[in-house]
Length: 411
Image (cartoon, rainbow, N blue to C red; front, side, top):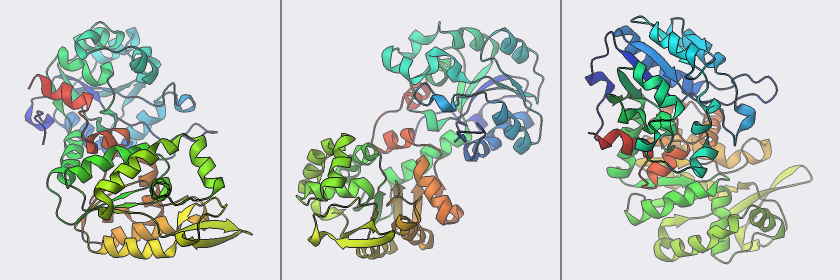
């Protein structure tokens, strides 16, 4: 669906490859150790292929951010885990593009790889810099990273779809200086997500939940207006916003929670979507809450009540299970409720099991979404599990991703 040269179609033997991957991983707040290495494992086939074909590989990646400072740590453990999965020693150099990193890249032999320091150590790579300093790719050529690493490489390969929404030098500027290609994971992500957007087998059902409702609303209008989604099943705070847009109060406690997080701004959009696509948007018929340590449910006809609603109820679950049972394409972003709490995991668990039991083509993505799926089902029953969060949402919302633009520009 994109015009990007595939890594498999270019010669890499004896060439120094600058390989950009996304192995940004969840980190334990106390031990600072990686708690989920899914993204690391996803990068293994690409690295194995390059080394087997005789490339000299310099791996660049990020961990954490200025907005995620507790996870802004060394990538030594990432290199160790990659070495274990790839089956060869990948040396870690705690230097991004300075003299030590440059010398190590120059000394690489065919079939060897080095993992360079955390890209987010560089100001030009952090999200706050991207927000404050708007630069086009061609304006990034004199930045520290490109100036120091690009002259050492023969080929740039990007396999970091999960960071495709970032307009940073490591993602969009190397393409201005050297030949480049897309890695297998990048091409795979685009292919599988494009299949949902371009040629979904009908009926196509979207399940949009979770607390980060800007993601849901970013996708909703696009997939409804283009008739990609036949039905959207809303849950989580997205579902509650839909109820409020229908004029149904969910009670002071939950409405204050929504207002405190400025999520009530989405009510206006929700009203618009319900007016234009009402029959295709499903919202909860009942909600679950806690009272005296027990899970209880309330049908929406009995609202408002002053409870902190945390999950969908059994009527909604049964309706959503029936709709998902008839689907031929399913896309999911966001859990149905606060699944980490035993009292409120019922909705999320039921939806995941309905999807796992369905023969439909299914795609899921987003950190919380994948974590929820891994908790309740064997994710091998899902057709495709995306490594991306923000990039996936932007792609599904029809926004042009900086990485895709950079990779296609010279093509």
